[in-house]
Amino acid sequence: MKEDLILVFGAGGNIGGKIADELLAAGANVGVVGRSRARLQKFEGKAEIWAGDFMDDAFLREAFWSARSLFLTVPDECFADPAAAARRLEELISESNITHVVNISNSIIKKGGSATRLVAFEQELNKIAGINLKHLRSANFFENLNWGLHTPYRPELKLPYISSYEVAHVAAQYLYQQNFEGKSVDVLLGTRDYSMAELAAAAGEVYKQQPYTDQNIGFYKPFNEGDFEVEPRTIQNTSKLTDNRFSLEYFLERDLQLNP
Ligand SMILES: NC(=O)c1ccc[n+]([C@@H]2O[C@H](COP(=O)([O-])OP(=O)(O)OC[C@H]3O[C@@H](n4cnc5c(N)ncnc54)[C@H](OP(=O)(O)O)[C@@H]3O)[C@@H](O)[C@H]2O)c1
Image (cartoon, rainbow, N blue to C red; front, side, top):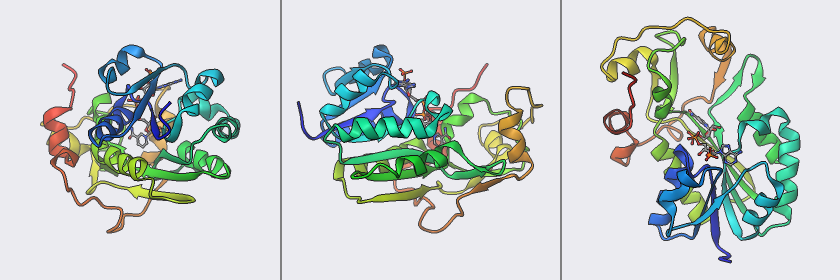
């Protein structure tokens, strides 16, 4: 057991993978968590591999036991009953030595008249006594463009976007330095807001707004009708672009996956 282990959930995916990379580069003891061992393979020999399901109590208890801090991203199943998911985490964390948790959240704080699910989940997590908890209310990741450059969003609707490298960098710093106390929120809005028309043009395409489907109308319509609230942009929560990887151009050059 390494007592200073930092456990990174979702390490086989986008943000968790980048956090684990940053922490390993800084020389931290890292445990990477995900269901698919294959997706965690790249950390073999560098980090502790914890292949298992977040929803499995015994697995989580064992993984938590060796950790001092953790990066939290929860699977969709948790949002069916956020209070129950948070109480379950509370119990498991209380049996562990975990003191610091960084939780990924969302800069879109309300939609359709209600708190968005990650922001509502923050409130449930805040009830966990005795841990230091940092919520990172992140703008949309540039990676969302890989779901499709042409969407039902109105062409001119502007939303904040950010590089997941930048979010990962902030999360990794907090996890490594453990320099936060109590329950707090950081807002990360990237350098500016973008419309889909601008993002498609930056990727060399003319934006074609798509019709709603039965599956996505609930997601897109409140945005298009202005029925949402985003964290207000300030100097403090606007990125200063200290690293080339944090720019839209870097994403477009290296990580954009256009469907043929
Ligand atoms: N996209 C945005 O614009 C945005 C903005 C703000 C916040 N966020 C939040 O950021 C989170 C992470 O985003 P991302 O882009 O890193 O997602 P991602 O690439 O899909 O990664 C999620 C990871 O979670 C793991 N996972 C899923 N279910 C699991 C389970 N039951 N047990 C254990 N591991 C599980 C998956 O690995 P396995 O399949 O191998 O288990 C996957 O690697 C999102 O879920 C969202 O809540 C996103």
